[in-house]
Length: 89
Picture 1 (tube, rainbow, N blue to C red):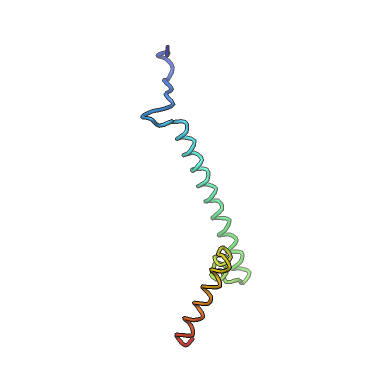
Picture 2 (tube, rainbow, N blue to C red):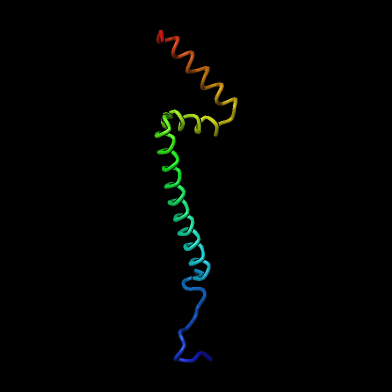
């Protein structure tokens, strides 16, 4: 029998496992903090690159290209070339 002096611990309130929910929320919060710290680190690296004379916009484009599949990059470059020629560029 539960004591009236102790808080009643019901792990499931309204069909929700409170401990599990708390765990999920806390994990997401930790990861968001890590993401925030990483974003700051990335910003610092781009500032360093800019101060070294690199074009940050071009660096971002290269990073985006490196994430893609080689066939996708080739297709985009081919289309870009075709469009440029169509416009007389």
